Image (cartoon, rainbow over all chains, first blue to last red; front, side, top):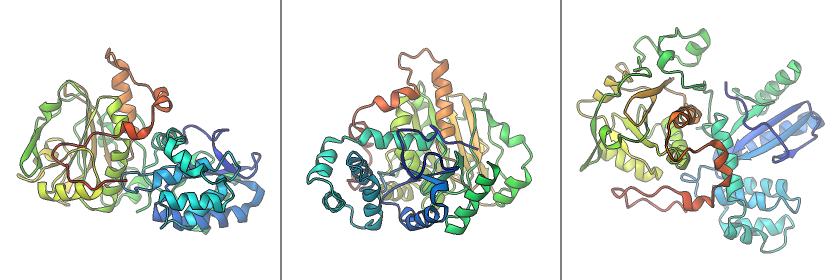
Length: 176
Length: 228
């Protein structure tokens, strides 16, 4: 069984308390339809556990299959310095069928970024290396497609519905 | 298809998996692997030579790649969902394989015209070879063929620069084996080579913008759609 490499750390985007007993990591692709389907499910799981759960998202764009996935991931990263990473993350998944560079720039302004922030980051490829590093960490962790989840560092093997994910998380939490 | 249960090829352990009795858990998760499941050639053996069509009018020989590590990815069929995920993943990891100077080759029993359409549709940047006539002959030579299915099993081999099998792994038919086992095997090879170029995992974050690192397109396949 492959474990998560590297473990969750300061470089990650984490939502929830650092002292949460369980950390759920998703490797996802903003243009992957299955990831869009699972997006509200992850939100439901987060609501279910509240402060007991920390959620981390890592990029795993299959850029040769999904031509907009890489820029979408870079755009979400570009929103982070302004504290808008998760707003951008949500906006992209909620509008998955419209994520051209122009769309991404529009979502950036909608979540409160200064005009030009997204365009400049995409042009300069400011976050390309970061996104690729996420991708390679997934490859090293045994990710073979998206979405893929890790619960406290272990690859989750169950279904992608909320009940299954909740059960998987509770099982891990019970093991301590 | 979303990613699913995939036992990891943990180390470059050679083909020892082939001789281990399937556990109850593995049998349950891979019902199609029966006693006609492939018996892969193990690490240490010379890789059988072959020449196969890569396009309707071009052939590729294993000997073309002597001097470099070679990754042979036998897979059951073009267009099937798991294969697509697996090959799409390898397509994406290609720059990493190339850092080890390794060549990736996909092989299935599909014909060259089918491969051409598949590679074009999926934007693949590595050759797909047609193990088509006699059907599955190369897969059989590597112990990767599954007679009841009439297709190759999902088998991976990493060959060293001299053409010796250094790692092999058989994944259940429906399971995408990922790329971590291949990378671990390539790292093992790189670690023991005195090659001037010795990539390590630590190199990865320091690389330049990814778009400049994209693989060159094979000359034979110039009509792909642009990915971007």
